[in-house]
Image 1 (cartoon, rainbow, N blue to C red):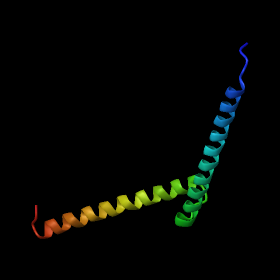
Image 2 (tube, rainbow, N blue to C red; image 1 turned 60 degrees about the horizontal axis):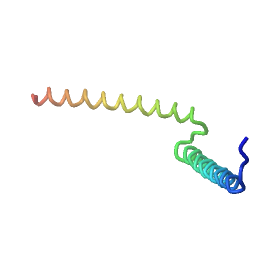
Image 3 (cartoon, rainbow, N blue to C red; image 1 turned 180 degrees about the horizontal axis):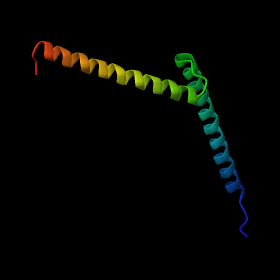
Length: 81
Protein backbone atom coordinates (compact mmCIF):
# COMPACT_ATOMS: atom_id res chain seq x y z
CA UNK A 1 0.00 0.00 0.00
CA UNK A 2 1.26 3.45 -0.93
CA UNK A 3 2.09 5.76 1.95
CA UNK A 4 0.42 9.16 2.05
CA UNK A 5 2.83 12.05 2.22
CA UNK A 6 2.58 15.07 4.45
CA UNK A 7 1.86 17.24 1.39
CA UNK A 8 -0.97 14.95 0.29
CA UNK A 9 -2.51 15.07 3.77
CA UNK A 10 -2.25 18.85 3.76
CA UNK A 11 -3.95 18.99 0.33
CA UNK A 12 -6.74 16.71 1.57
CA UNK A 13 -7.17 18.90 4.65
CA UNK A 14 -7.38 22.01 2.46
CA UNK A 15 -9.97 20.31 0.24
CA UNK A 16 -12.04 19.38 3.30
CA UNK A 17 -11.79 22.92 4.68
CA UNK A 18 -12.87 24.37 1.32
CA UNK A 19 -15.83 21.98 1.19
CA UNK A 20 -16.85 22.96 4.73
CA UNK A 21 -16.65 26.65 3.84
CA UNK A 22 -18.79 26.07 0.76
CA UNK A 23 -21.34 24.10 2.81
CA UNK A 24 -21.57 26.90 5.40
CA UNK A 25 -21.99 29.45 2.62
CA UNK A 26 -24.79 27.43 1.04
CA UNK A 27 -26.51 26.96 4.41
CA UNK A 28 -26.42 30.72 4.93
CA UNK A 29 -27.91 31.36 1.50
CA UNK A 30 -30.62 28.79 2.17
CA UNK A 31 -31.47 30.47 5.48
CA UNK A 32 -31.77 33.82 3.69
CA UNK A 33 -34.05 32.31 1.06
CA UNK A 34 -36.31 30.80 3.73
CA UNK A 35 -36.40 34.16 5.52
CA UNK A 36 -37.35 35.92 2.29
CA UNK A 37 -40.00 33.28 1.59
CA UNK A 38 -41.52 33.94 5.00
CA UNK A 39 -41.30 37.74 4.87
CA UNK A 40 -42.45 38.31 1.28
CA UNK A 41 -44.91 35.47 0.80
CA UNK A 42 -45.82 34.43 4.37
CA UNK A 43 -44.75 30.83 3.69
CA UNK A 44 -42.88 28.75 6.22
CA UNK A 45 -42.20 25.77 3.97
CA UNK A 46 -41.55 24.98 0.34
CA UNK A 47 -44.88 23.13 0.24
CA UNK A 48 -46.72 26.26 1.35
CA UNK A 49 -44.92 28.24 -1.35
CA UNK A 50 -45.86 25.64 -3.98
CA UNK A 51 -49.52 25.88 -2.96
CA UNK A 52 -49.40 29.67 -3.11
CA UNK A 53 -47.74 29.49 -6.53
CA UNK A 54 -50.52 27.19 -7.74
CA UNK A 55 -53.13 29.66 -6.48
CA UNK A 56 -51.38 32.52 -8.29
CA UNK A 57 -51.22 30.49 -11.49
CA UNK A 58 -54.94 29.72 -11.26
CA UNK A 59 -55.73 33.39 -10.67
CA UNK A 60 -53.57 34.35 -13.62
CA UNK A 61 -55.36 31.90 -15.91
CA UNK A 62 -58.74 33.26 -14.79
CA UNK A 63 -57.61 36.82 -15.47
CA UNK A 64 -56.32 35.82 -18.92
CA UNK A 65 -59.64 34.16 -19.70
CA UNK A 66 -61.60 37.19 -18.48
CA UNK A 67 -59.49 39.54 -20.59
CA UNK A 68 -59.90 37.33 -23.65
CA UNK A 69 -63.69 37.30 -23.21
CA UNK A 70 -63.77 41.07 -22.77
CA UNK A 71 -61.66 41.59 -25.89
CA UNK A 72 -63.99 39.39 -27.91
CA UNK A 73 -67.00 41.33 -26.60
CA UNK A 74 -65.38 44.64 -27.58
CA UNK A 75 -64.45 43.28 -31.00
CA UNK A 76 -68.02 42.07 -31.52
CA UNK A 77 -69.54 45.33 -30.29
CA UNK A 78 -67.35 47.49 -32.52
CA UNK A 79 -67.20 44.95 -35.36
CA UNK A 80 -63.43 44.63 -35.16
CA UNK A 81 -61.73 41.58 -36.60
